Length: 112
Image (cartoon, rainbow, N blue to C red):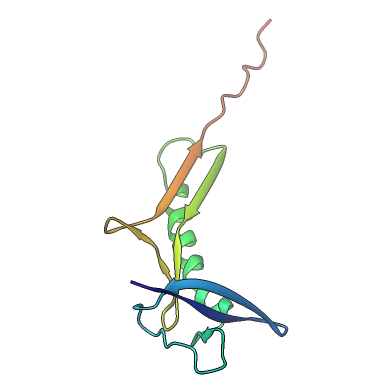
C-alpha cells in the first residue's frame, strides 16, 4: 500500500494536506504537475463526523445513574478520506474512541 497526499479546503483560502492510503475510496492521484490530490469535501464537512459522535458519548455519560463525573475527556481517532471525509479510525477492526471519566472527592463539610 502506498501513501498519497490529499488536499482539503480549510476555508478562507487555506488548505490542509493529509497523508492517506492511496487505495482509500475517493483517492485519485494528482495529475501531472500537481503535488496533491483534492478531496471531494471541505475539511469542515469532513470533520462533521465528530459532532454526532461526541454528542452520543456525552449523552451516555450524562445518563449515568451514578454521580456525574467531575471531568470527562474524549479521544476520537479519525482517518481522513477523499470521498467520505473523515471516518472513525480503526485499529484491528475496532474504532478508536477513548473516554476517561474522573470523579474527585469533595472534602467533608461541617466536621469539627
